[in-house]
Image (cartoon, rainbow, N blue to C red; front, side, top):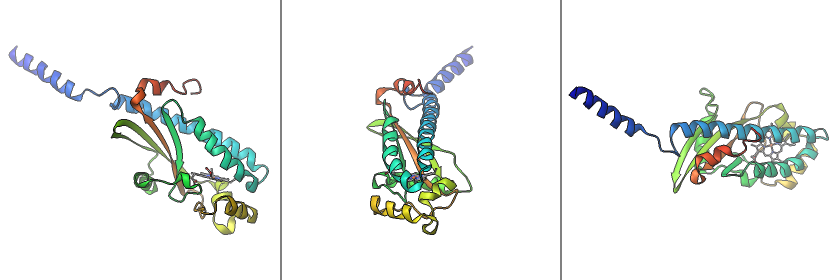
Length: 202
Ligand code: HEC
């Protein structure tokens, strides 16, 4: 009997020790991860749609659509406590440059042996922030504007020069790591609220 009580007490203590906090626990992480992945999916689908339509009038014309639409779509999906962005180590827009920490995460995706599908983590500095990263790789369509110099239309080269004089986002081949999506959620508003966001469109 005494042993049973001791065991029960031990189970209770171990159980408590493992208890997850509401905001950073494993179950919250799993839910936020799938929500973040869904936000990336919606963002990608919308931008790709805009890009495909714009490309019908040629890539040089599509550049302006891309430079106007991409920030608008970013804004559309950055709400209710969530933010989404696209970053790169060889950025076209200087506002899309990786910071020091993101550069380390991006290097994880550069490892072609492991081929990570995504990565996420909790950054706890002040508020707890859940951060989800997903690699962006190129396909043949992307090379019209991000390919090697000899493969770019001269018109594309001149529009890029004019709009993005500091452009670094060229020289890619199909399948290359172009950058990554970064989805962040500050749990200051509570995990529950975050999970409700976008529920209509998911
Ligand atoms: C019509 C030309 C065009 C095509 C095609 C294109 N992009 Fe871009 N891309 C741009 C422009 C212009 C920007 C800068 C947008 C801005 O100012 O925010 C950009 C920015 C990006 C960025 C953000 C980082 C940065 O460099 O500023 C990523 C990531 C990206 N493109 C990936 C892709 C991928 C992947 C594809 C193929 C699916 C693709 N792009 C196809 C023109 C294009």
